[in-house]
Length: 107
Image (cartoon, rainbow, N blue to C red):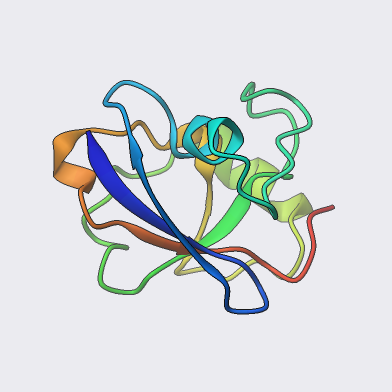
């Protein structure tokens, strides 16, 4: 289990425990966190689970693959250093304390 903090665009924080093996997107979905739509269900075929990873965590996450990088081109206001798709981040004990912030909207 990892404790993950999801921050809505308006600043509302949701701290939840997410089981190892799930994705950060599934953690949001399973805990009814608003701001992550996940239209494709985690297939990396859209950008509706886009978040900005807290700067303290950007170097700690596994590198993104080319498919995720390509899908981020469709995200709302992507940040080249902090944007990630939550469907592509697998939860492990190493992610305990991860903080992600949702953009103003998902497209």
